Length: 112
Length: 113
Image 1 (cartoon, each protein chain N blue to C red):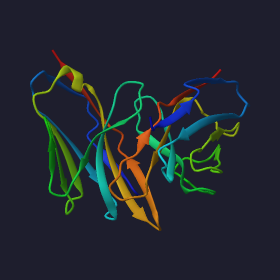
Image 2: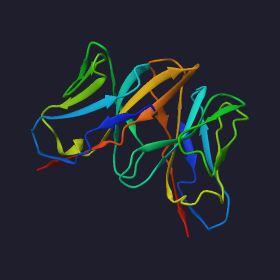
Image 3: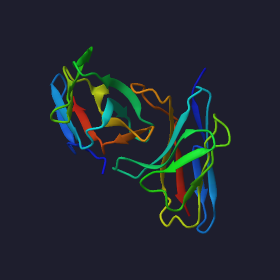
Image 4: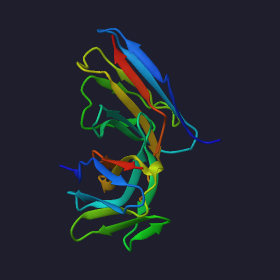
């Protein structure tokens, strides 16, 4: 079974804090990895792709450990506007298809 | 502007009725997906299509049907066989390339009354 597991949260953090989310995936054939952000009652939107060497986009850092089948997202200097649910997404290939599998998401609330 | 459009945004259905949710994209994407999301839950795959005239069942296909007669369109029918259809339905599309993300429509919120 192809599964993606995330910290369930919720994470309640003060403004300015650093927070980290973890995600594990079970299918070693997984090809690519993403973090999406979903605001309440809205569609998910891509936050960032996750590259093998790790990557950073402003206050956000994503890392991938293929050996441990583990992905992480680090948010530094949290803002109120970061409050949302963060979805870990894994894309794997098999029999010519490229399915996307979503984790259940981790809810973040940044508190003034 | 390129994008993916779902309609309607809100839909009310009586028990025993079939309803069809529309999903159209002008991104020239080959792959399209339907997901269901229940309150406080993650996205679960209903059906996906990698190419025109072909589609595959996802994890929760029972009570749903789809068609893919055109590249840009992937409608989802929620049939009366779906026992608990009230949910948020999300359509997505992507290219089949390995490192490309999926783009989502704004979703349809279906309520059975």
